Image (cartoon, rainbow, N blue to C red):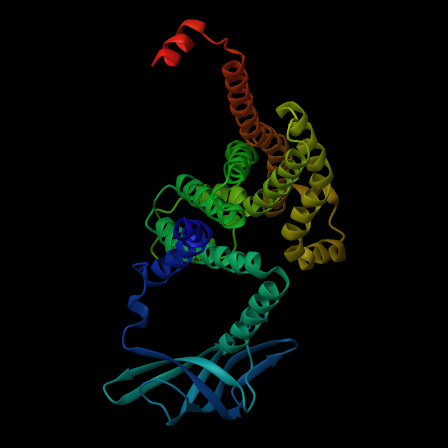
Length: 407
């Protein structure tokens, strides 16, 4: 019993760790891109800079910055060489290096000789790892075991997107079915890590998935109605020019609608399920209708904040665009008719509708699943009590008693 209890307690975490390990070593099929053959991607330290060939026109700079660098990794570690930083006249993409900066570069070589070194970008991986470490430590410090499981869920989500979803999309698989499959799996895994093997898991997963299906259907319908092409997604056209002309960008955009809202849906489903579970625990004889109404009341309170959260999440990256519209005096009717603005409105409103539907779905599934257990337990108790009372009320048979006495 002790071994089975320990296994039940830690099996979900062990399953999550196993999945993380498998996903880490799972190949995507795109590791050895042809453009990186005969190259070494390493860190360098900038020793000197030369801006004599940089052409400055106000804020815009073009030309090239030459840097003398010390190679810190790879085949040519310890050597010094000249690297080139190409400037395209774009503040968004260009970067200027200073002495002492650490940069990520691509070294083209032939045998033991360096052909060229192109400065890729500032090296940020160490800072990113530091930031991720702070996040993990704080999460575990304040949430304990639950925080550790949240880290597992976070890692699985990142790896599933990078190792499975993105390669599947690139191979031309149907983005909507792939997106639904992956979000279903992630929803189950995330909630399983929260609740373990319990009825609450099934209730929350059912409510969240029903909301996602509604979001998926509405997203497909209104994307066609709005006449939105998937090329509104940033960098999507670059895929077509890179040899992936057969990709259905519009379907990828459609899948992004319910994928983007799925996190908030999972959150709301867990909140409502936990509330119903607490209510049923405090009042075991509650009916499924009463439990569902309690869950719906919690959902009403959460929906207002959740939809606002979704709005801020989608619109936060478009502050500069809104400032451009206002600075140019663009009429509001024109703004709302632009394709990329309509795409964001579609994302936000369809995602919010999905959240609104998650609340009643989860309240209903929680009411049905979490109260049924108590009814079964009460029924079994009442049956056993009735059996005992009947056995006590059976009258004695004097004939049998006489036979026992004679024996």
